[in-house]
Length: 114
Image (cartoon, rainbow, N blue to C red; front, side):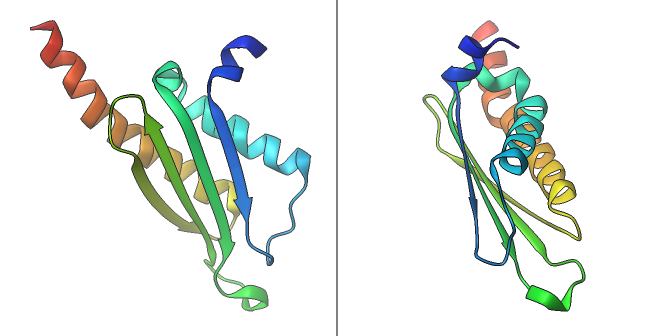
């Protein structure tokens, strides 16, 4: 994907104060989201990712991800996922968002074709 295509979609990554984050880590999460949502990327105006550590230093399945996608002309879609690793939670949330987009936006596209 070239930079002009990527510039169309704004991906915002937010972390709580329990999550160690830097520009490289945020870039990897953004690319994971873009890869999963590639089919709908031109139809999305904004994607917002919130990452939090629910249990702090106690560990376990405590990384919580909330992902909100905003398709043009449609209500925002919000999904959530929990996992032990942030990357896994982001992948699960992006998969959920993709299914929701296919269901809502994809269904409307099918209706317009008939």
